[in-house]
Every structure is written in C-alpha cells, then in structure tokens.
Image 1 (cartoon, rainbow, N blue to C red):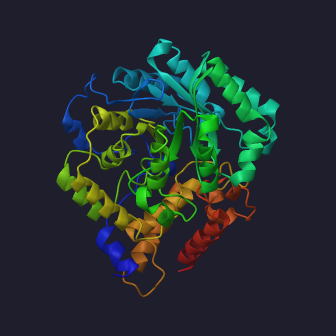
Image 2 (cartoon, rainbow, N blue to C red; image 1 turned 30 degrees about the horizontal axis):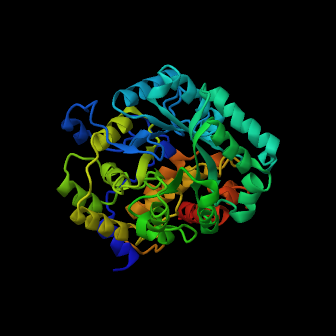
Image 3 (cartoon, one colour; image 1 turned 90 degrees about the vertical axis):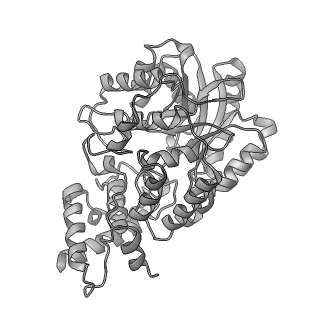
Length: 459
C-alpha cells in the first residue's frame, strides 16, 4: 500500500491532539471525549501508588507543571499571558483530593513562572502531603558556572516555599552530548555540590531526565555505584517502546532505557506518555480498534495505562492545563488497570501503523522557543503533522483530492498561525536546532513547509 492509500484508509477524519498549540479554547482542547463523563464520579480513595527508593508512597499519576493555565484560558507553555493562579490552585486542590501527590516543575517551565505558581498552590497544603520535583535547568552556557547553577538551585527553594526538594533532577541529560554534560554538571563541580546537598537532606532523591545522546545516559548509569541515582526520568510510551528511532533516529527505544534502570533497581519517572500529545487521538482505524475495546474510555487513557504498566515505573507525568484533562487522567489511575497481553499486542499494532507515515517528531517541549524572528515553530509542526495525518499534504495536482487538500491546509495555516509567525520568516540561523532534544533539523523543516505553503498559494 502506498503512503497516499495508507492515509486515505487509516487517517480519514483524524485530528491529532495539540489543540493548545493551535490556540483552541478549553472546551475544544481535550484528551478524551464526552463519553468519558458517563463513567460517573471519580473516586477519591482509589489512586494507584508506587513505592520510591526510600519508601515514598507516590501517586502513579504525576502532575507536570509545564502547562499551567493562563488568564486567557491557554497554556502558559505556549502563551505569554499571566498564569491564572486561582485556577492553578483549583487544579492542585482537585488533584490532591483525588490522590495525586507528585508535582513536577522546573525553572524553565511556563516562561520561568511555573515554580512560583506551583509553590503558591502547594504551600496551602501540609508539606507532608505532597512531593515536589524540580530541576537544575542550566541550559544556557551563561548559567553553567558553579555560582550561577547554585543560585538557580537556591531560587527553586524560595519560589517553591520549601526547605527541601523531594525529587531533584539534572535537566535534559543528552541534549548537546557529553560536552554539554561535562560543562553543565561535571567539570564545574555542580554534581558534587548536589550530592552533598542530598547528604544534608535538602535533596531527598537525586536523579536526571534524559533526552537524546545515549552516551550520556550510559555514562551516568555506569557510574551508579558512585552517584547512587534515586530515580531517572525517561521518555516512554507505546510507540517509543520499540520504535523511537523510527520516529526520530537520534532517540533511543524506551524498552532499552527502562530495562537498564530496572536491572539497577532505579525507579523510572515517565515523561511524554502521550508523545507530545500525539497519542491522545489517533487515525480512524486505530481509534475504532480502541473504541471497540473500551467505548467510553478516551484514546489518551490507553497511552497512560501503558506508561504505568511496567512495575518499575514510579509515576507518569501529565501536563494538565484544564480540568477535563485532569479528570480524564484520574479515571485512568483511580485505579490503574494493567494491560493484558492481548491489549499490549493491540497497542503494538497501533504503534506500527503510527510509524508508517513520516511525521515531524516534535513533542512540543518548547525548548526551541522563543524564536528570535518570531516564528511559532511548535504550532507549525503540529499543523503540518495534523495535515499529513488527515491526507491534506498532496503534491500531485492531478490527484482528485488535491483541490480540497490545498484549501484545507491553507485555511488551517492562515487561521492558526499569524502571517508574521509563519515558516517563511525563518532565516536558518539554527539557534532553535541546537536546543531540540529530538534533534529535528528545524530550519530545513521550515523551508520544506514554507515551500509547500507557497506552492499551494500559487495554484
């Protein structure tokens, strides 16, 4: 079956999740569907918990604090508006009332305001009722010095209103390779400092999050007898389990990452359980297969069930901007339902279908932003992937669907991306490329998408 036939068979009517990227309202953006409401009230006493290295009782659903809502109703990850603190408080209260006790933030999240907003919301609760995870996000070389890194570390305590961090991470190991790892943490003495902070009790668990260069991951695990990692955060979902390299050749299958942690008895924290939102809604074929099994469950719930299926997983993070996201995920984890062998085979089949057409492997991490020329990189990538999934990328003018595909793509592009933020404004400076954990050649992709849009406009 050629690619066009595949898309027509398996992708008709599909809409990938990524509404936050496209500027959708809370009602439009959902990880589930209205049928999930028919499942009834969410229990407050059935959250599934896992045990940490030092006996911590951690909720299997963790709250990722990189997408707090803003006063304009959009995610702070994609929007410059002020964080809606009242709504953040409401989400935190609801999550904790239903058993969530792990909150993951960073100095880099929400344009630098996530820790402050998270701290305000959590400080209204007894400190022994929740775990805080944050990171040393010293990505820029001007923060690599010992002094700047330690200052960033100390500010986290101030913003989070706490005297200890439950789970502290070296942020984004593998981005930039071994030179980056040495410059940020090893040669400057920062990792030695953090190890001493753990001894002093100000850090209760020390770990790292991994993206990209597998040499860095292996290097740190080979020295586990020295560093004694308490946990490690990895990208893991039912596509990345076996097909991470098909999505992006620089990625590593999460089966390998998880297995390496498991044999050292290091708990795994899961990020990207939805592959940047792309597993929250699938093509028609895959959707029908999942709905036949669980008609009232959201498509996203299958990905979350997979993320918690391995016993060595401590918690699975979800960046929940809206209450319907939170409620849908709570239904999945209150309690978590292990996947059967038959269900795992079904997800393997869906993963194989997923990697059969060439999407751009953007996970909306936002590390490429802001673009100095104002280009909305994540939204453009989402719209391209969405158009590809729907069959709206057609090069052959004689194709009977060319006219409709052209119209749909241009309408979507013009409506969702302001003219001054479109791909044609890329000058190829490459500033974004060096920050991308997926190693996407962003300028090259911008040129390709701009050419597609220009060709469509000229017809």
